[in-house]
Amino acid sequence: MKPGVALAWGLFFLYAVWSVALSGWLASAHVLRGFVPDLGLVLLFAWAARLRGSRAPLAALLLALARASFSADPPLAVAAAELTAVGLFLALGAGLEVDRALLRAFLCGTGAWLSSLVLVSARSLALSGDALTLSGQALLPGALASGLACLLLAPIAARLAGLAPLAKVRR
Image 1 (cartoon, one colour):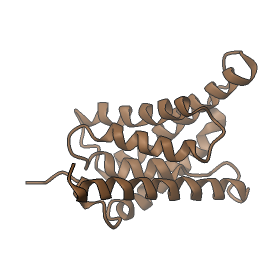
Image 2 (cartoon, one colour):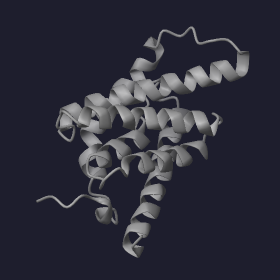
Image 3 (cartoon, helix red, strand yellow):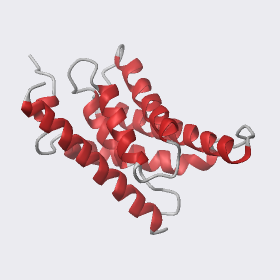
Image 4 (spheres, rainbow, N blue to C red):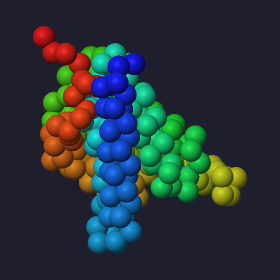
């Protein structure tokens, strides 16, 4: 791996840590009352279509590592949640132009809802040993906020300093 690419991955991890920390700070303030965006997914979805080859799952794992460092959830559940979200993005990216703003925002909101559902299910199973009985409607405000944040912040996240070596060369 070239030193520039290794530095870019380190910066991506640093940006992921900052975005997860900012999301946690917004959630702890109780100002947004459930409408807390998943800024880590915004960063991931801003870059998932631009990454070379099959590097999007690696980016998802780096985001999962950043999220696990701030979370009480099991690290494997966090990794599964992030890989589920990026898997949805990549599966639809095979047939659609997912790097367009509205579709990316919709997929980010859907990915946030799916990853939250995976984490809540894992937490419920670990704590009580029972399967989840949540309908998922309680997770919709966060998914809506994530989609809106992706619509507004993804162009900024796509231009973060130092991440250009990760991008595909467009011809």
